[in-house]
Length: 289
Image (cartoon, rainbow, N blue to C red):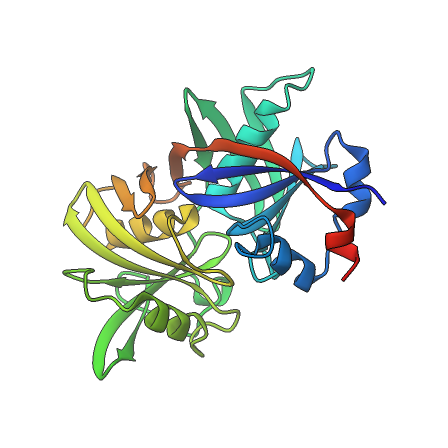
């Protein structure tokens, strides 16, 4: 049985194992991992180490297909930082036909992206505010944003929700230094208000063009960045009138630029993606346990 070949990419410190199912046919037999195998591959002590695993595949609908898995082995609809890394990965394959713009098939629908110098710009689609589509049991406020309250350590916080093909919860704070990310993030992730669980973001508005976010990713935990979360947060803050329709989003791993030029249209995210290293995983490690 062949070893599994992979490449490691990162976007603002959000890192991913990427497996080539586009031109490496030997890998096509090795991509139907179990949940536990994915978790082991992503483990930072006993595996490769990553926030998620991406399989690049041909698509019958668009240019390529993205299968995305969280580090706990659960399949996710899409990942904003991950899709930037996937686009850079595809560019690095140096395929005979090179396109300026790629359409990627995901469980969240078609995602369009292009290389912009050293960055990747992604059309992330329209933010979702219909509760049943996010999904969330929170009801829409006068701003048409699903809104509610949640109790954290005997204090009530207002919580907002939006979807970017995956669910997001946002809490706006004056300061982030006292956020108990692991305790609060895991509690909100599995709140009954989110039937399929949720990503969680704690946001501080420095000014209308600079927003700082701490990230708890569903099925993963604390990460250095979340592209879909940056987009969901900008959309919510923009509708609330406390940010502009475009802003720099400061994440622990660096900055993303997010723009929502038309409130009835798509939101755009621009940021870096980098190749870290290439390697192989022993077939005995994957299948021998």
